[in-house]
Length: 142
Image 1: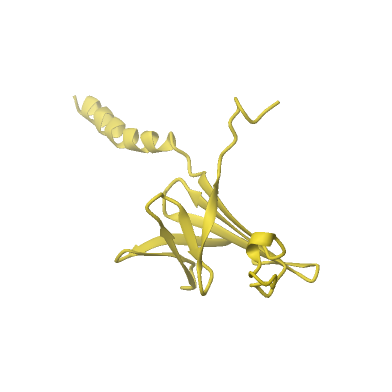
Image 2 (image 1 turned 90 degrees about the horizontal axis):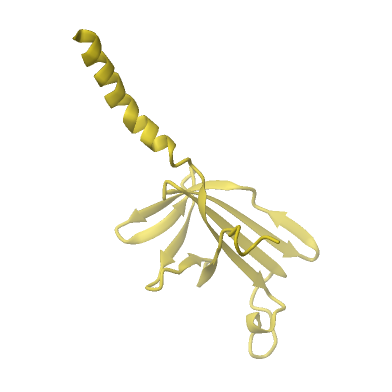
């Protein structure tokens, strides 16, 4: 009888761990922002540049746990590509204000609008990040 109870307890402890193993830690969302300062709709009405760089990209990868992310930015100026490197961030909601927070305490404000679009604070303005769809083996392969 003791062996049966021991076996039942072992199974009861093992089942939750096995259930979690079905959903591996992975990237579930990828957001991207691309600013091309020479594109017509990125210039002022008089044709001037609004930014002090030629182009810039931000890519945010959100993991399956819903709070872990990885952020990378790349700036192109005068033919030079300057990369921030991959920074691990946490998505933090503090009294309705959302942040991307790294381990050193650096943060970037973000927000979701009523349509579910993600916006990132670039200093003076928020910019909408585009959701990159995952590959469909039915539509995206030839």
